[in-house]
Structures are given as C-alpha cells and as structure tokens.
Length: 214
Image (cartoon, rainbow, N blue to C red; front, side, top):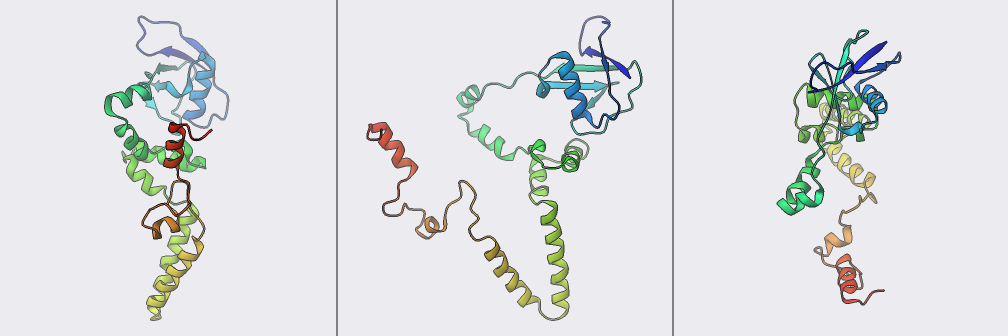
C-alpha cells in the first residue's frame, strides 16, 4: 500500500512523496520511524496526522487506505539547557525533570501503550502516571496477594501478627538495597554529618579549587 507524505502548512497542492507501507505495521511509533527514514528527518521531532487527526506514539494505527495523505511537521527544537538555566536559574527545569514521566523508559510494549492511552486519551497528568507505574506488574501482584492474605489472617484473628511479620519481612527484603544518591544508614544515624576520616564530594571540590588535588 502506497500513501502520500505532505508537509503540513505547505503552500499550494504539492504532489507529495510516495511511501510504501509494509504489511503488519504495528503502531504509530513504527510508522513515524518509517516516515523519518524516508524523509531523512529527526524522528523525535516528527509529528504525523491523518485526516486531521494527530497520531500519538504507541497509539493504534487508523484505517489508512491506498493513496491516503499523511501530513507531517517538525516540532521546534527546545531551547538549550544553558538558556533555560540563565532565565530561571535551572530550578524550574529540575522540577520539570523530576515530574516528567518518560513513557519510552517502560520495559514492555503493552505498558508503553497503556501509558500513552492514559496520557493522551484519559488526560492523566505525569504525576499520576508516575504513581501508577511506580510498581511493576509483579509488584502489583504481590500487593494484591498481601491484601488477600491479610483479609484471611484478619478473619482468623491473626491480623496484628500478620502485620508485624509483614513489616519485618519488608525490612529484611530491602536490606542492602540503596539507590544512587540515597543516604546510607551510617549517615542517617550520624545526623547527616560526615563520619571521621570520610572524604566527601565537597572536600574534593575544595581541594581541586585550591590546587591541593592533582
């Protein structure tokens, strides 16, 4: 099947560029990559529309017939990070990074498709998506099982014991797991003060500035 590619907002009726769509095209992401390769454009900035409908990533493909026109446009480049930091000091940019949910970082295709549907169709903000996808499917299964066993333990009069054992199990299963940037237990117990003899990043910076570190 061959479709026409036309630039959105062009003056006059141009013939457009022919693009052959292969069979079994899965989603809009694959279509966008195909169009970007054909036109030699940057895929991340490429936007597509079909019959006035914007095609979002990981959404289902519309019914495209032979000879249909796919309109495309390039999104403007975002301002450089240096310019943004000069204007707002970088604080707004850092907050936006923390609250921005990256759909493409999700591990499976169905999760990316669900997240895209929730963002574009249901209109959920990125903060809600961060909460929803904070747990993996396995994590949700464990959470549901925990509630079911808790209901069973409560019916047998063992609710308090079940809760205590759950807290102990949670503590022991998370021992030794510290992500990058998190404070260690020693740092917390020492009121976030450096331990005697501990070399910190601030000390390294000061030594480099003074020329004491080579």
